[in-house]
Amino acid sequence: MATKKAAKTIRRAPVPRPAPPAVDQAETALYEVLRPFKFRGGVVKPPAFVEMTADEAREYQEAGVLGTEPGELPAPDADDTNT
Image (cartoon, rainbow, N blue to C red; front, side):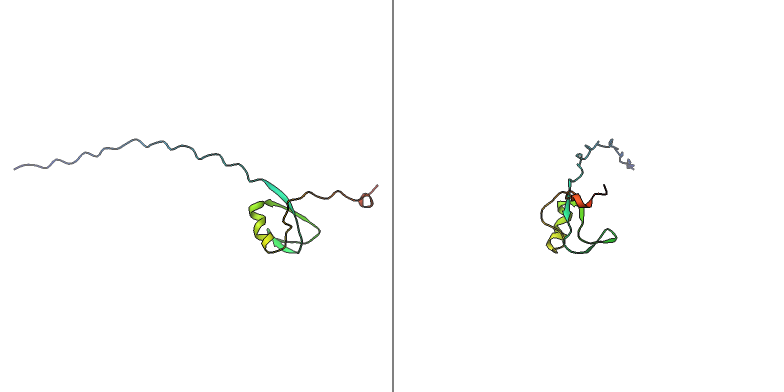
């Protein structure tokens, strides 16, 4: 009678995978608040600016609560200084 041989299991060494490409932090900008809205657990009211990426801002811009152009903080008026 013939006996069956068990098949040999061949284990292969793990194939090293390339590291994922480095992802840069998304560039953020300041957007002017046009109307009050909830943002990160609080309510933001004008006059104010919030910092976020263009992708984050898009939804708020479509709702009409943020300005459409990234901006800079306005310089304080001479009357606003405490000198």
